[in-house]
Amino acid sequence: MRIRCTVLGKTFRALECDLRYGDAMLTKDDILRGLRKIDGRARNAGVLIDLAIYGGAALAIAFDARQATRDVDAVVRGSPDFLRGAAAEIATEENWPVDWLNDGVKGFISDNEAMTLMNGFPGSPEGGLRIHVPAPSYIFAMKCMAMRPEGFDGSHDVSDIELLANKLGVKTLDEAFSIIEGFYPASRIPAKERFEVEEIMIRLFPPSGHDLK
Image (cartoon, rainbow, N blue to C red; front, top):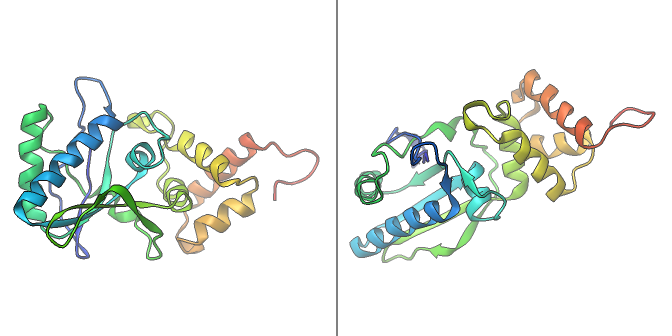
């Protein structure tokens, strides 16, 4: 499991690793257990932490669309030192690698984010963990921008994009790129990702006698 962190616009590499038991992936229950432990420590210390979680972990904990994930991509605002210490303690308790936080998602954060507060982690002025998750359309756009081949380094990007396309009712290239360009300028979308999105849409909705538009 990886959590990627940026603090108040400044990126730091707190801790980074695969949080796995041998070859096992981190399950939804594992992720939630770790986050609840951070929440408890933050409440006891009177520290409020805002954490935005992206990617496969967001699909698992907020949308129940994944059973497990290799990474937890996140951006944290506030109290990075506290979070680092809490994460290290939890890693020891859970027998997880100590380096389970990283900021690798930062290059794919949109200037036009669409985030919602996740139920069960509201935080409060007195402390706690407040979790934000992206709208399905935002995860779709991020996945398209960050796409890796299915299975490469444990990636499920392609299958996640297919799942999200179906969830969003995306059936054409125009619809797919309309969503992506709602979060990222067209000039920022690499040609490779454009081609791969087209391949996915053709596979999901094969054209019949006319162009896929």
